[in-house]
Image (cartoon, rainbow, N blue to C red; front, side, top):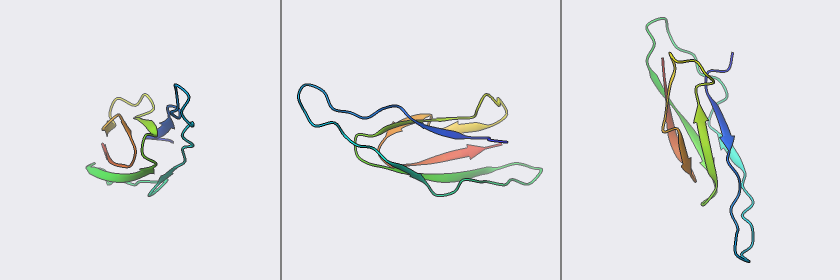
Length: 79
């Protein structure tokens, strides 16, 4: 099952400026945890000005943070 999902929240460009074309990559598409849980990081690479959100997919026992941002970031996933 998906335990964390990343979503583009759009690309910029208003007021006559050229729209930003955004592309996103993540350092891994799968994370495994032992029965005792823990915290691991996923590196999200995105262009400057490219917004994104990270979600636990509705699973309240999974922590994801930060939940949103712009550009590249390290996102923690904890169970």
